[in-house]
Image (tube, rainbow, N blue to C red; front, top):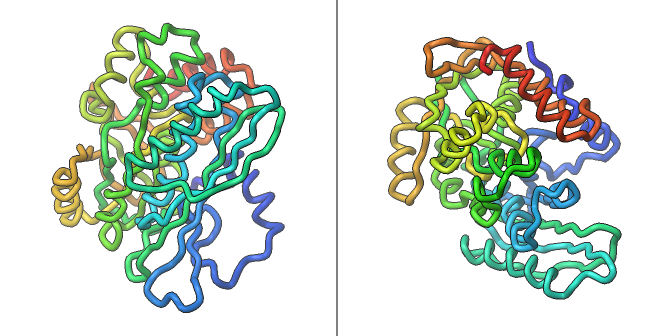
Length: 352
């Protein structure tokens, strides 16, 4: 059986969570949902959804070089967490940490990235805090409301459920590959990486999907976390031309990169991965398409607690995503070493 403690990030989170007293108004348990769900006195119909996300390590690692990307992702990351719990957003408050001597034009571009992201999904920045710090970072804290009778969390997957994405994936890991491997940006431009929080999809899913989580840490990481929380496994169909975005497929073809890496890497986008009863899944698909999205059927939930990939050549292989998820810690921060060890994992799984 796969445990939450097999993943170093979960262990690190629990070190903090065990110290904090639990609010009697909090609905969700640790790890259980993308946003915290809180009872509000006098609000009998809705829970308050609150979430926070910081873009810092991506800047330090050189993953994002355009200030507008930093701003865009900082806003969308927390808004995506609202989408994953089916919340209607109230707005965003931000914190900007800016090194002394930073050009005003750089800060202005970061702010423009946040504004563009928010306006694209009909949300406003309500205010925030400005700090001086050694390294540039942006934090977004999003707030929203969720109907009490339609709570959507990461728990609730049932064997036999259909598992879907709200759209093709892989763009986050495509950008990560270009940066970490030192490839030409002509292969996948940072300016094209503008993932959107699926807020409309979250509204469609609430009260209908059994469980949901966003893919900000990559698709297979998301499914692995859902597996560990729900005590059931998944069999995922790897028809790459259907699962991966077209520009991601083109990058794989031009660089000889195995497509599985675009699902298994840790830098995702903001699609929603969700599970629903087969009949409901078909109806949800139709509603998502009418909302302008392109949902992707990934596979099926099952009782056996493994993550199994059904490969295009007909083979099936179980993958241990704890190994992949722990690589960032165990590789000692050496990105070249990380990429090399990541490929070695694929060979051990029989999919290189």
